[in-house]
Image 1: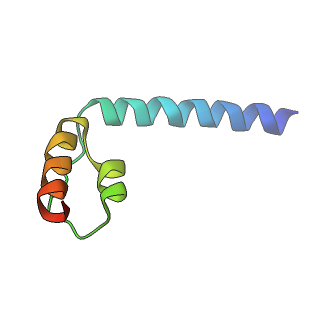
Image 2: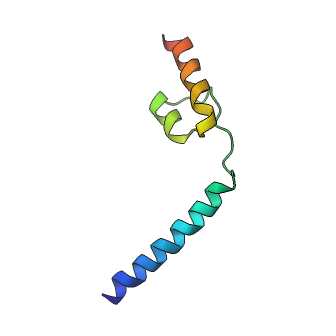
Image 3: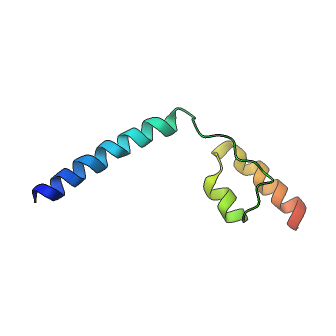
Length: 62
């Protein structure tokens, strides 16, 4: 039980750190011409890039 409690505390601390890191807009912009699938682009893109990614994909792939 102690091990589980410790793991939960570590998980919670890591979650808080990741949340702080991501909220600072530290991720670099995702290059639209990056060679990967549309699903991967949507997975890694910032929210403000999604519309442009979809438009570019539609232009090149119909």
